[in-house]
Length: 440
Image 1 (spheres, rainbow, N blue to C red):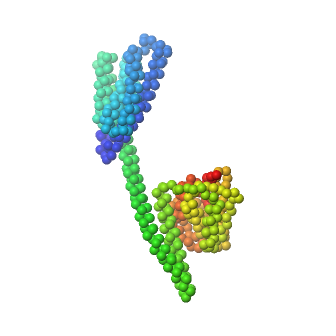
Image 2 (cartoon, one colour):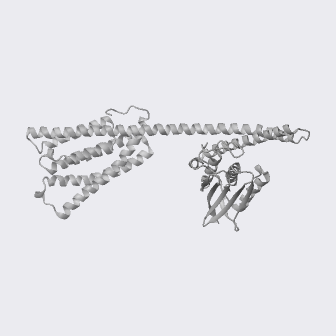
């Protein structure tokens, strides 16, 4: 607390607090100028006579000095701010200017103590205020704080001799000044330590975030390579199994085994695609969008599912009479719809059907995928879109899941600038609704 910060990134912290000191100098100089100007206006308008206020002539001179000096400090801080942004080699000069401004504030508030009454020990409020401003709002190194204490203490002692001559009063006033300076020193060092501690913590967090981001990029690259290398042999296995299925001499048991191989390849390929999609979404690249008529787009997806006869669950589509257009990425939105339909199929019985509907309201389009299956328990709904969600369950026919499908849908819809919501009741079914902006 009472020594210089001896940590890594100390040079970065110095850049940080010098910039903050410049900003503080601008703000405080404006406030100090407005206060001095207000007092000057009051004096001029009400024509305050010198006999009514002690040491008015001295304060009058000090007020004019403040009115002239504070704008100079303000413009100097703005100039140094530009130099700071252009080149960091003026740091010592900038900090020297800040030091002078803090000393200027302290000396002026200290002088106000002498102007107010004959005995400054009884009216040290202004002096204390100046020290608090310098200690709290500015950040100084240890040696700068010591210099401020010594210079201020010397100025107080010297100035005091012009107002007091008795030894007891000189001693008591200097003791009061010493106590205030000790408090200022403690506040200043505590303020320095507090800011340094926060800065280094934020710096450590920032460095950790960079490391995490790099690790995530490496993970995504490795995941992409592995997934790509896995898809090729799986495709080869599935193709070979399909060729062997065409053999009419093969018995029923082997046919079932080959069908199991093909189904396993499809599941493995689906998992790989989900992992790749998740990795691609983490990169944060925006989608390329195009104007698409949604009725035709959704009908094409429904036709593909009906032709595939997956699980023999019937799919119905209810569109609009008029064409509806939206800006979408066809490939990504196709994948989102496939995931929603696949999820609906997984939790629907063979005798049930799935409804896909679209409605347009004002400038918004609503695409709904509705099933009449087992539904989602209420305690799982808040986690339904989480990655590797704990809401992941087996389907009615025992289909497994790694909990990525709905999180992928959520991310795709989000990158389209849309929203997706879910409404579900156990044993009655589930509705996923995508909201997008329509275009003319």
